[in-house]
Image (tube, rainbow, N blue to C red; front, side, top):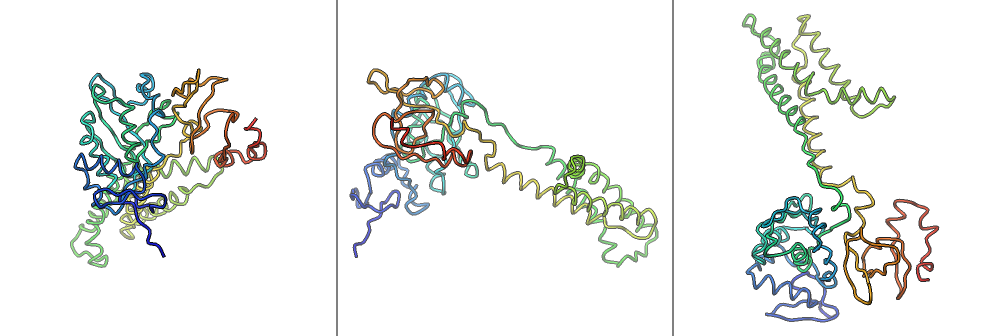
Length: 374
């Protein structure tokens, strides 16, 4: 049984050919060139964080694909900040998967001195790049990322809408108020716990109880307000949402506690009531952070490329997809998206209809591949 040779860069089997350099085996010229680039810039520590961390570069880099990024209008739409000496832009990199990726992407300035800074957000799989347009263009930055195996996912939507922060400052304030009141109520309840409800000091029990009642009011009327508002809106629409039983539990706990305190029958359950609100708010905050790492607001523009290759007078030219007109001849390479209704003029093609079927189940019934070959 033949032993498979692994590529030093990407870890794939070297089935077609084995390229050897410095006692290291590579599966293709692309992986070899990426290794040479890292070696020349003293970035081979990249391979120490993980075994075979690289991404296969073969077939992933076509320089002319990014010619549309030389368009000043496109640059203005994509850039978060732009001046004569600095451009800030964020790229989505679905390929980011390990600590080696983070190390390499945050050291792009060592490969090209035109890149001032690069910072990754592993949770969102994004890299924030600051570069000097006098030394390197946006197109060259994207080509560099594509060459080392991290081709940015640039879609039509990136040029139409700007990303906005989803940070909810009000929720943080409510968590802080609930946490402060919960901690103090628990502390003031310790004498009640340790004495089994029999505090000998006159007036001390009543003082602690009424202090707990006062501390619970901000939690009930401010921190827990979202639960009551959401439950009320659901009931008005004759819909029982998840906040309805939560609001009911909070209300019952507080009403019972206030009754016991005012009537003098006990200390109530305000420690449990404020704890419910505090931990529920913390859980909602973690839930928001999880949802924030996904993108649920994608529309059709998110699935279309920003640029397309057009053949005019026998010359291939890359233009923004928004400039595509009826009658243009376009070039669609392997695994690329067809940006508009088109007829296949030459060659054979296998088309993936999964996106269309997911959006509209009837599309596959009426779309016929043989019609594309006319």
